[in-house]
Image (cartoon, rainbow, N blue to C red):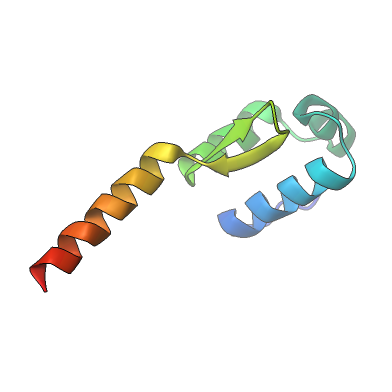
Length: 78
């Protein structure tokens, strides 16, 4: 499988394949010949985590909260 260099493109592509072609992350990795640990590490580093219940990667909640708090503090300075 072609692995995009851009993490957001990778996130999008993996989720599309999980949604359209595979019942699980394990099936995806096996069929696409992808190392699951490396893929999870890369997407975790980009701010995404695998949600097994929904069979997709989602933004890590802590990153969203930190981003919103940072934006709120910047808005209060204005």
